[in-house]
Length: 454
Image 1 (cartoon, rainbow, N blue to C red):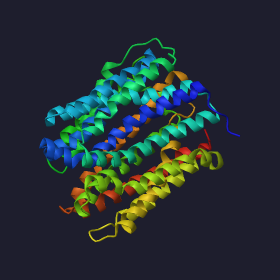
Image 2 (image 1 turned 45 degrees about the vertical axis):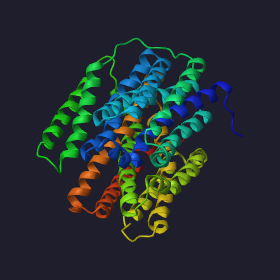
Image 3 (image 1 turned 90 degrees about the vertical axis):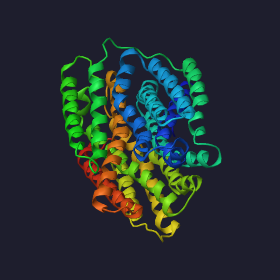
Image 4 (image 1 turned 90 degrees about the horizontal axis):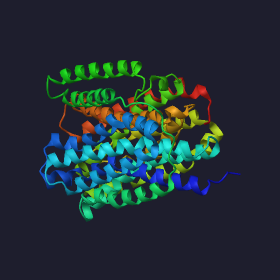
């Protein structure tokens, strides 16, 4: 018989899941709305890419600082601060009347998400004791990551077609206000730790991530790409060196000493890289090749969303029966089969056979992957590093998506050597399959041997 959450635990879980859902949703909600945004604000193709990247790079680049701030000054303070910044950023995005305003506002929104996301997982770990209830709570948290990303595509298309893409961001404002009031009353203040903030380390990681993603995006267009990539390697190298030296690092390197956690971070980056490319290219494919409206393109992902939801609800039962590692293996195998199948879609393909059926496999796989990856990413972590480990989980999620998408966009352009969206999509998806296969190998080597159901 499953033990029930106490009233306090259920309240915290609800606050955590709704808040995390907002941050994940905003990664994908913009994708189906991009054509409308481009038309309304007369965005260039380069600026259009940065509407997405401004959010994910700032989100990923500041996550480590956000997680460490929660450890030092308390999760509740950082969580509430994140809600304020995220809500204000969402309002500014909705009011944007120029490309630069929109891109800056998306970055501001990403900064709020960077404070929110690691605080949510750390709050969950603080409030729910280790054991069966925490396993279920972490499974729900991981499920929100997949469901939020899938549902964001539907919501983005819905608002873009029926109202305005702006409402996809305005809707965050009242939710953030309600969550702020609720959290202020319900969340207990966590014990803060003595220490200082590693501002230099945070700056090095942020600049390194921006340089790396920007350099990869320029590979097929400019010879200066390698200058950016070399700068990124230097900056990230300095960041790692600094983290090994300072007393209060934003990313304690001891977090990576556990092979299960390290494997989970690497596998998560690869998985999200493949999934971001899938969402990015298939959204365009449905609108340009099949002629779907933004609403129909969003609804075109509905089979995946439903499969994801059903699969995610079964994760706690599957991990109890088969273990965390083998549940993850099963999810990755389903996703690999679905993405490989989808990579053969063409101009005259039947939607049900070529798109919907493989999407069901991808959705079921994603639902069974993200929760076990989250569990493995915080395995055996101590309380003082809970925020940092939560930050690394979310960094792997966001940075993996940005880097993976950039790499697969370049791959699809260079290898396909064609302007055909169909050919570029097929190659991007096959590159995604390669990412997933590597993630599967890492899972067998680093996560499955632990046989740790928690």
